[in-house]
Image (cartoon, rainbow, N blue to C red; front, top):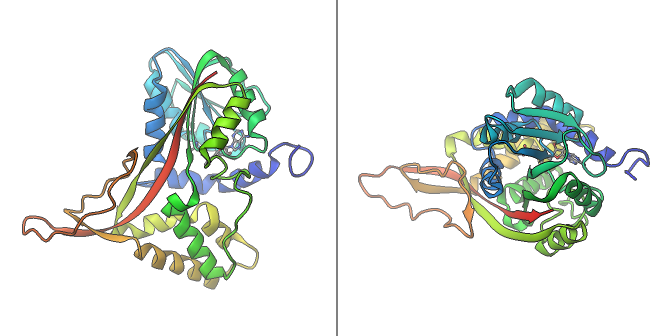
Length: 315
Ligand SMILES: C[S@@+](CC[C@H](N)C(=O)[O-])C[C@H]1O[C@@H](n2cnc3c(N)ncnc32)[C@H](O)[C@@H]1O
């Protein structure tokens, strides 16, 4: 049962309905944080033309469109999300013959179009109230032996984009950062690989593989307001900006704290070689030595480390 005793995951639905418009904007921004992770999941899923693929927690539909492109010309990508507002935006913005969208709670509901050959998710699987029930339901939406691939965040400490946001919100509001139950629904619910194994095993998945994917996400210093906008749309900064009694002065304080924290992540790079958000298996080097070779201009970039798990399994 959900928090209000009526609709499972009702709190999540409300939250994502509210977040949806800013989520759509942040998807359109250059260097949005989750993009390269979603690409890694798409590679791992190895979709084939003609397949039917489910996009779990598809949000505003960008990933469903990428799936439909990969399945073109004859497959079907079905984006499913708990939030009606997310799906409304996806339907309005994604014009693609191979992509369709439905509102459903994948913890318990069976969307139209099942069974699927494969299921994909970019950060859409960490918000279930009962993850074993949800993954059991998702397994039941796949053909026997069907493929599952998703990414979910590693712990907070491995993700500068979250530590910087939490520190800025806490500094500006005077509230200590929230430390809830590490397994509670939220971006870090599946941070522990042992829990992923346990949940997927209990849900009946086999051949579970978990690999780290991580990288340094970089933006030119001049684009600091892009990063501020991305980090303000969700999580602790959004919470600090949307509480009761938030006026212009609170807003300025929160955003200034965020800018100052981000300044602590500036590094010098040669020729402004920002990664544009590439991620790779394993660790990556964090910046350059700022060499002052006469042929190379040194440019400062904001460099935030981000780390996720890439998970694959079979139904
Ligand atoms: C972090 S967002 C990711 C959205 C999208 N995958 C992307 O990468 O842009 C998480 C999404 O999962 C959806 N979600 C959460 N719980 C869900 C559930 N029980 N069933 C279906 N979708 C759910 C939310 O509504 C939200 O759109």
